[in-house]
Amino acid sequence: MNKSNKVAIVTGATGGIGFAVAKRLGQDGYTVILTGIEDEAGAEKVKELEAEGIQADYYGFDATDENAVNENVQKIGEKYGRIDALVNNAGGLGGRARFEEMTTDFYRFVMALNLDTAFFMSRAAIPYLKKGAHPSIVNYTSNAGWNAGGPGAGIYGVSKAAVHTLTRAMAKDLAEYGIRVNAVSPGTIDTPFHQQIKSTKPEVFASWKNNIMLGRLGQPEDVASVVSFLVSTDASFLTAETIQVGGGQALGI
Image (cartoon, rainbow, N blue to C red):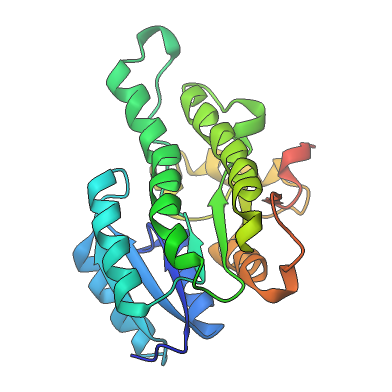
């Protein structure tokens, strides 16, 4: 282990956008720490990165579990001595429910999946980010944070709006330590996140690109390149910002 390497944690990194981000940061010279709840996939992804000469590690835990977050981030911090970048990629739709029939458990689950994960991870990482070089946090919000989401995704929109404000609030709070906090807002990215509709209604999935100004769906690497920029010194004067990574989808056409 080379303690001189920059260290990046990417949550929910066993596939999709998270793995693309981890791979890109590894190519940028970071030692990348993947986290997730799919231990077998995590071990496979670490091997895949190491085969490319990237220093990687995997910690299996649920980022909605406060105690598990605290325990594992402390282990990472003590092992590597610092954290330079935290990418709060973990999150998701969690399912769909209209408000009238929405259970309290479902409400709390979606909020935990998107908001709690970013808060718990950031809070635990701050002491080690203070020891990092040009440290930064990148959160994930969504168009749903502005347009309140599609049918049944209202609480997802609420959780992502909360992440948008959390990003700005943490940026204010951490500026004195030189820790920058920004967010990306991915549009429709072609990942397993959309696998159900892709397999059951491929024509609907294919039509989504018609609402994107650049005329195509996003790829995980499109998000990874923006995260790479945000954690780099090229973005040293950027904080409290949210970058839309959606080919102009947020404007609608």
